[in-house]
Length: 264
Image 1: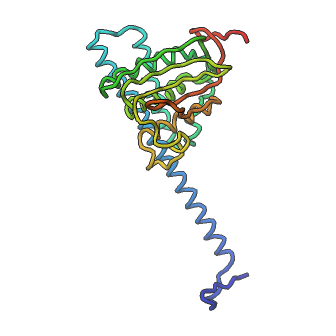
Image 2: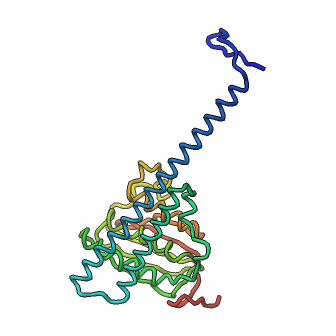
Image 3: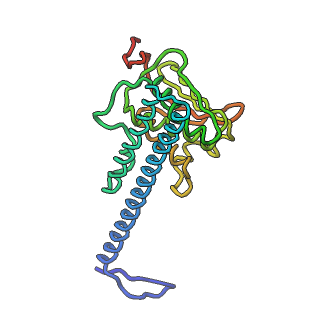
């Protein structure tokens, strides 16, 4: 069976329908290959972004420790967490080179879930960002307020998400970066405030932008959003009288610093 090819009212010949089907299948294969390569490039870019961030934090943190003579356990744990984030990024890079789906790599890893004390997570994120903040002419502080909270999740991934939010605030907001966490009605709310102009667009828009339009800030946000959603949480900007504010929200329960869960 054949089909007539018509242009400007004149038949230019006949083309077998099987040829049209083959051409369509080839086009679909090309589109699928292009999308796969684009996904791999973005996954590799994310991994490189995540390797650079923790390594920079550790280097600047060690320099700050050397000057201040402070290598106490809390700061060492914070730097160790940053190295763990770098290890995750290398793992993601390995998966990207063999074509694993990029979305899956930002989610909680099966078998790695545990009760995570969010107060400790906040303390470590602040300590890890201290060296970067000093180098940028900024300051960073923070603490958990009120009832301690725990969340069931991947500790390193959650540290990765919060670390990206704090890092973005230091680099793109500046001034005094303030990190605060609290438990409200079954959800933990961690706010990151800075003295900058705020985000140029809603978080969801920045996270969805094509890779060329994201920049470092957008890519870090996209990673944080993916991790939060994998933990049934969210990342969003919030109105504030001055500066910028971004909020990481997660389902959580009351629990002590060691991660044991209270009743309720």
